[in-house]
Length: 168
Image 1 (spheres, rainbow, N blue to C red):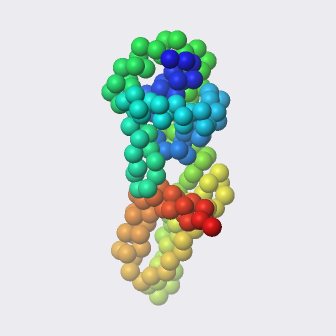
Image 2: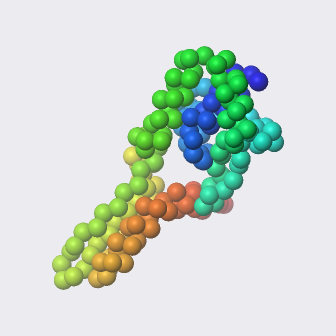
Image 3: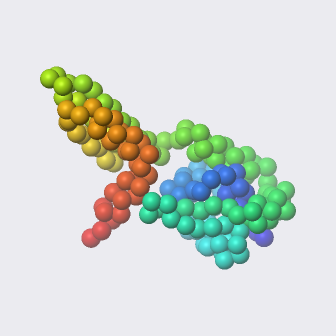
């Protein structure tokens, strides 16, 4: 197993959760461990070897290390230079803690006058608005449900917006 493959497997092990392409790009580029497309080729190889699973969550491709992948990583990870491990660990920790600048979700509910409520939610990408939705309603429970739904399903909405924008 070469250094790039070990680095990708180690990164998958440190994430501990299914990871989307969006976060792969962030880790690959920020940690400067591998070129994105080479990383995807390695992930495809790992899927064939049973070291990771590739699946879809809400229409977004996600990657997750398998038990066999963890065992394999533990055999080879000592060959990975400490500096690379440190960069991967820092980027993974940042992603897992939510302390990154790639995408942020926000919701805001305000009471206007005469029993009318105002709801605003959106997705920012690198602090630039990607999507913003504004709704007025007299039903505060409906507004609160919209906010809760948006917070939970923002990844699917994000993927759908990008998919729609990418169509010709």
